[in-house]
Image (cartoon, rainbow, N blue to C red; front, side, top):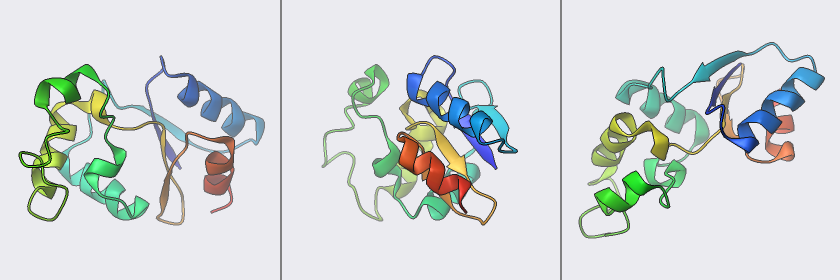
Length: 122
């Protein structure tokens, strides 16, 4: 199990606390320092069953600078998918956190205790 975190994020710290309390075996990836490649982002999206815009923090300053809310410039369909993935790789602050990749090949966005427990059960 791997968890992508930003140490400054309270949701990430809560997820780590729960994983530790449950005795989980996991690896921490500080994704702002160890930035995921486009292929890694594609893989985690496949594992999550989500699209890149589903895990994008659109309120971040980088998102506003890129004007990600402009649906004409940033279509949320197959035609825009690779551009979104490139933006996440270039601006990792835009990636929703924490993301937990489970041992069964799936992943969850662990923003709630329930989601973290779900990852533990996989």
